[in-house]
Image 1 (tube, helix red, strand yellow):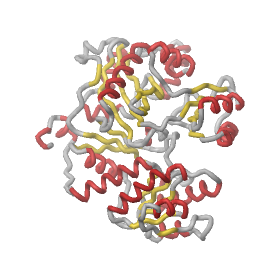
Image 2 (spheres, helix red, strand yellow; image 1 turned 180 degrees about the vertical axis):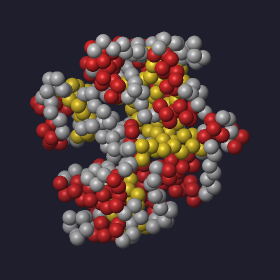
Image 3 (cartoon, helix red, strand yellow; image 1 turned 120 degrees about the vertical axis):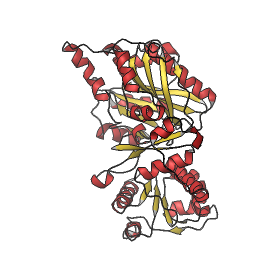
Image 4 (tube, one colour; image 1 turned 90 degrees about the vertical axis):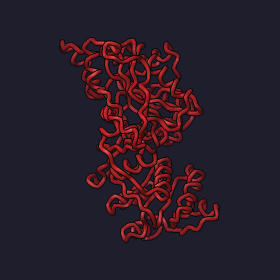
Length: 439
């Protein structure tokens, strides 16, 4: 099972129920912060620096030593609940007083936030050999919950060195934790160095996706191994199964229209309610299919509103230029507009929501804005403005992208589709069953 099964394991064992597969003690070694650190020391695998704290002062001292920004979260959480990236002591104090009840029995984990490429692996281990059906690379950089990220199989930008390191670390962890069955690992890659974010000796939401695209019956194999079979007996060998000749993209699906008070901005807390898959022999086409399938209405022309946090303005300039070059008109709030104008691009300035009577909201309602690119900004007014803008896009069916990484990929899709409009559909078995001649 998933995280709920993991959380039930100890209680079931205490009640006298036999737990097959990975032992309850080894599950705890993966889930408990200090015991997992011992596993990483033993296996010589690096992780972002972090500490476990049981009070506010320890959190403040620890974060100052590690260096901001830091990722804070309660231990043993499901779906990234109450997980946030904090950028200074004021935000940390706010988080500790608002989001969690910290006690010695319920510590808070505080880790250095590394803004790298997130990579996810599902493996099947018998405690000695670990077969890896596939490696998935996330489009959104670390900090967006893996369930809300666009994931790509096989990875498109990772070097051979990084892929080899990921295979090596996965095998080491499968053996060190004596995993018998499934394990899901999340890595972050920065400057070609690989770090572990977390290991879960359980199934994950990517298992059905990987099973479909690789034609490996992952759950069936894992169950047989949990009951005593070995990887070799089942006809596999340790390491990565050679990738297929096509690309599969997993895109999240959100139900924001049905959840009126939920902020649609992506972050460490999971908000998606499902996912879709796009598959093709070309990455851009697979991504296009996934984005369309997930319900995002990507306009091919019209006006794009940019309103981004100060920390994102430098990166946003090139993105704005790319959309302008595709023929879109741009509008932006004052600070963002200044940054865009410095590139010599025409941009209309629109007033912030709390300054002028809902100027932006009115433009979204009347169909004058066709897509919004908005990243989270700090400060009471900014946060409230952003929330109202994002909710207006949901209510009026306008695409709203809250990660610059997603926006870059959407731009790439639009650019590709301008040049090659043909998109064909094939049945999954035509790809998986060897429809290679269609490439």
